Image (cartoon, rainbow, N blue to C red; front, top):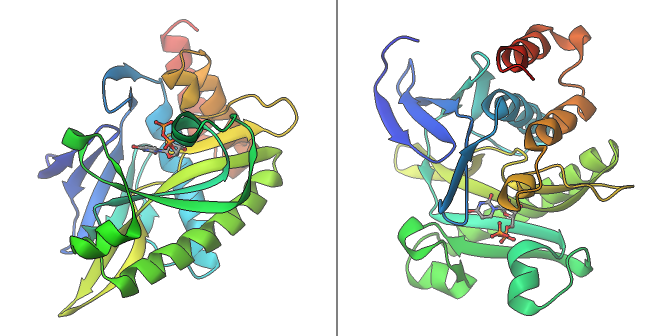
Length: 260
Ligand code: UDP
């Protein structure tokens, strides 16, 4: 890999300066963290799979008219994206109670919610990404009311699309996290979908067995996280040899190296 200027290193990705102004390279790591980085580990091959899953989901979303930062996948672990100014809000969409909402409000995990909920969290590691109300967003100027209208409308469309996409492969989309950014054009900006969509930021349960196919396997020490991520990719048709053998072969090579 040529030496490019590193812009930022996050928990699961590294961002490098892209080849042209206004572009960025997202490098997907195998590192996994949970509970605000108190738990750290690696999930072998995760970066390769998340790069591929996120490419797939962002591409499908662009086909239904959701503007995204995704430009193209460059290789196994990297994708070229548009540079945006990240809105400092994590947008969580929930269809079924799980995780923090179950803990906070005492709702049993797996209880379907009466209707889809959108929650906002302030992106701030030092504060542990606290839950906030829309009023806080307006009050502190993290996003304008017009931007929040775009964000909430897109979040609902993304949820509707993704619920169907996953249902078609026997997966229940319990909840997921989105991040949005401002794409600047002179003095004007518009909101587009940024970051990634992968089993790192989604709760995905097998519709029949209820088996967890996401990062909760790592968070809750359930084991089998590599296989779970691969299973999601496989069901999406991303590990088929017909679709390009490189991922399958390389993942297997990786596993053989580790004697698995
Ligand atoms: N999530 C995420 N990053 C975060 C917090 C949450 O990707 O920093 C995702 C998480 O994977 C889940 C959804 O957002 O799919 C809702 O997470 P929740 O609020 O239940 O938090 P958790 O139980 O992970 O603490």
